[in-house]
Length: 417
Image (cartoon, rainbow, N blue to C red; front, top):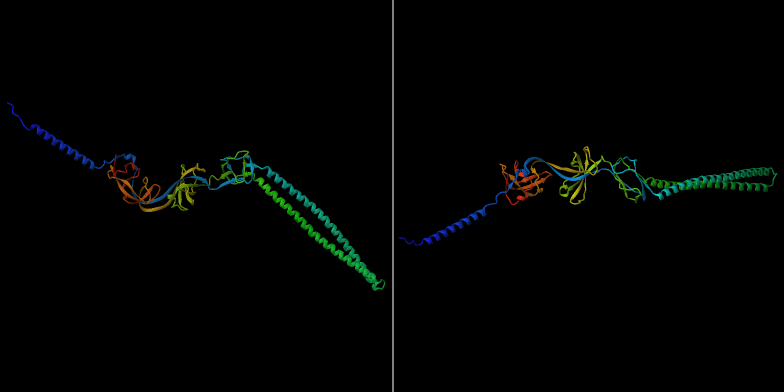
């Protein structure tokens, strides 16, 4: 006989509701716990990082820049007059000596002017020779006149003496004495005047000859100037070296001031570096430097710092003090390193990516077991090309990651695999 069971269905419903409530609470609790968990540390391949250890000791501060080798002495050959290129005897890369003819120019007008003044000078010289002959002839004529007047004066003096003696002997009347005296005085006066004319003629001859000589010297000087300008149309190298630039063509016209060629001494080079302005502020003349030509390093010394800033860089010229390696030629691209100072007993580390001197930053410090790294705050000090001073946050012997960890900026720890 069946027995009626009451309340069984209700109990099942209650158990089911309780179970669902408990399950929902457990899920909510689990979700809350999960939300409170920190993100899992990302994994970084150990082979891809750039680690370094913090050290204490001397540190050399350096700055680096790219540049080129340029000749220390460059001779820019410029045109002095309007001319036309007639011959080209040297090209870029040719070795030249001071008297090597590199270029020949022509200017017909200058040639005509030089020839004209040459003939004018010769004509003036001929005129001077003719003038000397004519003046000498005139001087001889005047000397003859002086000699004649001197003879007449002598005769008048003798006649005067004779008449005086006869008058004393009462053989001649007094009137004859007076006439003889007048003739003597007249002859003496004429003789004196002709002598003065001779002296004046001598001075005139000297003045005329000097005037003609001045004219000749003037024409000669003008001719020499025209000849020198004509000779300058034959362009010579001027120094021993190598032709650096020759872009002219035969028949091309040039104007005064146009650059005809550039000659440099290939073994007397300097390094012209472009240093970022933020790093160049500590550079001074006389500091040591090294120039890397990709075929060897050359010792150098800072000789000039450009005062102006162009495109964020300053030009620094370094005099090469070491021996040039093979292949060191003008316009060769080089890399230069200038030594600023040497620091003793400082805490330093390899320079991390994006680390700036005298500013705060952060680095991942590698754990002792090498399986992880934690971010630490660091304050940097003075910086060099490859190293930077550590002021706070690290100790000697700590190992840190120097490579770019921008992808892990939101994490405080990373795992190294």
